[in-house]
Length: 123
Image (cartoon, rainbow, N blue to C red):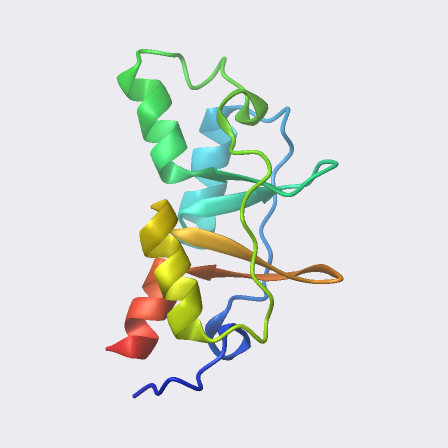
């Protein structure tokens, strides 16, 4: 059971799963499936993310996931949160911006919080 004092750091995942922007969408989908997650961090000059929705959108547009790179579909300059942000505020950000994942940054990238993490905590 949660209260308004629950912080992002209380529920975030700290096992950061990454993928190269040069990897194919097939590789990204395989890595997500292997780790049972819906988003991967893409290390670059700025924090980027690729999600299962990005992969599905590419397939729906009839792009070949074996030919399309993560860099072609990833979201660049993603919104981030700090570990000490209240979980209710992170949830509001996700709802307002239509995001399912927020990288957690404290000087460096330290985790990821997902709508699934928040739903599990707040329900």
